[in-house]
Picture 1 (tube, rainbow, N blue to C red):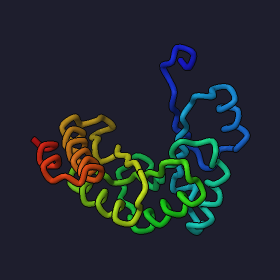
Picture 2 (cartoon, one colour):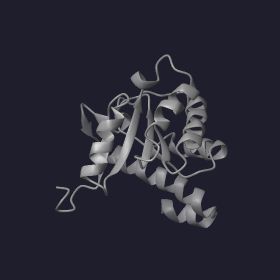
Picture 3 (cartoon, rainbow, N blue to C red):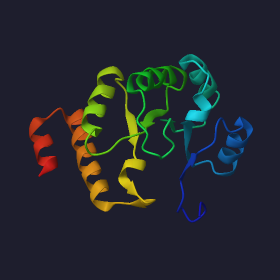
Picture 4 (tube, one colour):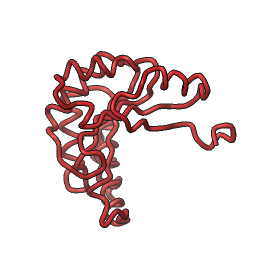
Length: 170
């Protein structure tokens, strides 16, 4: 897949994968973009600075770091704490794009994006899964509404243009 240019990104869904294993991925697949998922199990019992310090071990190896206390279950999280962690991660991993996941859906994505951008003045990403599913199956209508609202919020963020925001919904 890699040699045929079909796969250039991977998400590591493990609590602090061994750094030497991540180095091997990069050595064997030098163009691979890597997302380091930071699940609830990797954060339990640690302070924000301790989590950021552990993530900093991957600084030059990852493209994205995803704070994911929900693990795809749609569980809401403490947004303020996650924003504080996003900022701490940014200080440790200045080239990585920091993201957050957990409980996003069409009804809250715009508000959450605005709150994140008000306290995290860098590029960031968001991730949704659990609240877009029913019986372990993606519900297309829920996904479409989420994507529409996420696009509106993110487009507005980068353009600051009310007319563009309106057109995104039309």
